[in-house]
Structures are given as structure tokens and as C-alpha cells.
Amino acid sequence: MMKFMNIDVNFTAIKVIIFCLFLTLYSNLAHALDNMKFQLPIDCKLDQDCWIVNYVDLDSTSGRRTFFCGHQTYNGHKGTDFAIRDLTQMGEGVAVKAVFKGTVLGTRDGMPDISLALVGHDAIGGRECGNGLVVKHSNGWETQYCHLRQGSIAVNKGDVIKAGTHLGFVGQSGAAEFPHVHLSVRHN
Image 1 (cartoon, rainbow, N blue to C red):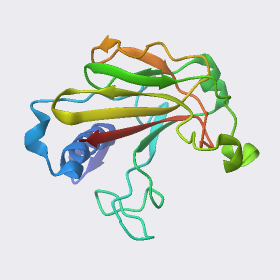
Image 2: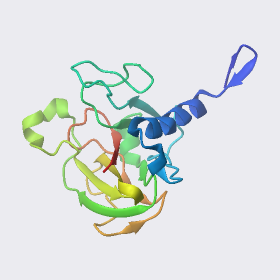
Image 3: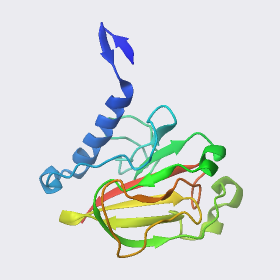
Image 4: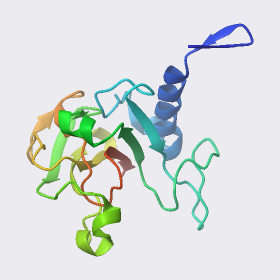
């Protein structure tokens, strides 16, 4: 909590609100949300033991721009990255959770947790998401969770899940240079 002009400001709450607003504004299809309220995809205290490090890149050129006109992204990034402190915390296990109810469309597991900087792009060959899964929600919405820890995926294709369902653990598989979960939200 911080004081600003004699007002208590909780920056963690503000970031969560901004993230949720982004999910609505980015799509320009707020009417299609049909009262969907997404939860955080990671079991942590935002800005205490996990952090949002990259947002979606909304700039269609070679530049970069987030939904709040910032630059906390990289060119072509299609999700939001929730990072944890380090490999030790990853080894202890930080749960990845479903943001909303839906049906698991598919999963992939078995890729090692190793920095992309060490293995290079050729080693992942079209599997940039690493270990992950896709969940289908109502009204044409889907969420994708990437870079989960090898061997941790706890759901199967066809499973019907609810918001908060344990999906796996944060990892560093695929095109990841640090332990995090990458969440993409798609419509149609």
C-alpha cells in the first residue's frame, strides 16, 4: 500500500484490475463475454511472489505497444506472462489454475524445463508453447497456458473444468528464458 495525494493506493489491486480490463478491451467484443469473470492463472500473490512481466503486443508493425500504451512486451507477443522468482520456486511448485470454466481441448507434456537461451529455437521446432494446454470456454472464447513444468499437467483432453481447477505447475519449457506461465486469451 502506498500513499498518493493522501489516498491509499494498492498497486497490486490496480494491476489485477488493469489485467481484467485488458481482457475485455483487447477483444473489442465485451458483449460476447456474457458475464465471464476470469481469475488469475497462477496461485501466487501478485507483486509479492509473482509478477506480470510481459503483456500482449497490440502494435501490428515491428514496434511494440501494450493496452495501456506502454512497452512492457516484445514484438509479436500474444499473451500475458506471469513470472515467478526463480528455478528454486519453480521446483517447489507454483500452481497454474484455470481462469474460467470450460473443456480441455488438448494438452502437451514431456518437454524439458530449460532456458531457450541454452537450447536455441531449433531445439523446440514449432513447440514454442512448451508443455501446455488449451481450454474452450463459452461464446467462442479459448485460453491457452504455456511453459508449464515437465510432467505436471494435471488435466486431460475432454476434461470439463471449473475456474480455479489445478492445471499443472509453472515451468520453463518451450520458448521460455525464465520460469513463468504464458496466458493467451482468444475469441473465435
